[in-house]
Image 1 (cartoon, rainbow, N blue to C red):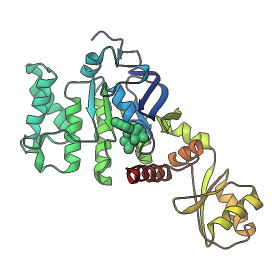
Image 2 (tube, rainbow, N blue to C red):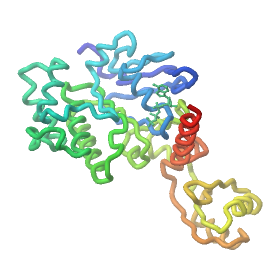
Image 3 (cartoon, rainbow, N blue to C red):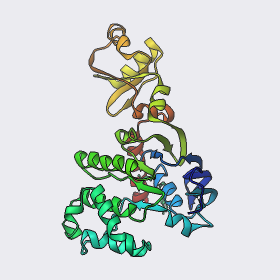
Image 4 (cartoon, rainbow, N blue to C red):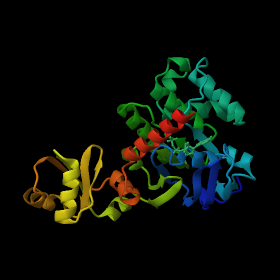
Length: 327
Ligand SMILES: Nc1ncnc2c1ncn2[C@@H]1O[C@H](COP(=O)(O)OP(=O)(O)OP(=O)(O)O)[C@@H](O)[C@H]1O
């Protein structure tokens, strides 16, 4: 391999993609260092899959440039493909074949040298805890086992960059956490960069750095810790008998801008716990319950975009429903 191992694993300049009138990705810039676990976090429809698909050479950009493992995603597509592994949302395993046969097929496709295939298959299957099930047909596997096998397959040809698009979507919490266990193990065992997308806040915490994406743009990029520190405020949520009146009272008495998120009147203040007694004393209306939480990535998202990821997804869902209703 000739590419410089110190060069960024992924380097993106002004990358954009439109589908007709829809500007899915509006010119994004970022770099991912070798060995980093880098996450794209954002609601459904933010442009995460489109970005990752461009980097994997599956979608051609409308503008801008990007290099992956040192190769241009448009002019050196084959070189990019040789150097990347893919785990996408839609499973592409062959259910009639055994787990091992699926991997052998992939090894042939990628030209993994025959002398190395056996050892490598064992190595990646052990990494995801499936070696004992190598002779079982994939159709007998659970969703979590299939995802693990896809991760093993994505690693088989020793890629420099592994792309994971929503690797845990649709899985139960226990399986999600097992998948993360394997991803963490992977970063210690392999010399690899991991680029993933997620809309699960808790999962973004595992990344070294995350880029928050919304409406086709990167809103902010940093480590999860730095992002949370940048918010500098606690989140307070209250339940009252009249949300509109509570929002008006918060503005009038405390000059606080509140809004309803996730079914509660929500706002941010510097020291939430100290503020609560004042809130009860001065709001001038009954409060049924109150919760105070330290900034989470959800607050980071809200801080930078003015909405929660869940509300943003609900909006995106509603607009898709409207579009479908018009058809
Ligand atoms: N092939 C396509 N044709 C038309 N519009 C598309 C196409 N692919 C994506 N889009 C639109 O581009 C926007 C971004 O979609 P994208 O799938 O990249 O978002 P996302 O953040 O990955 O969301 P999700 O998690 O739902 O996949 C959306 O408005 C989507 O409807």
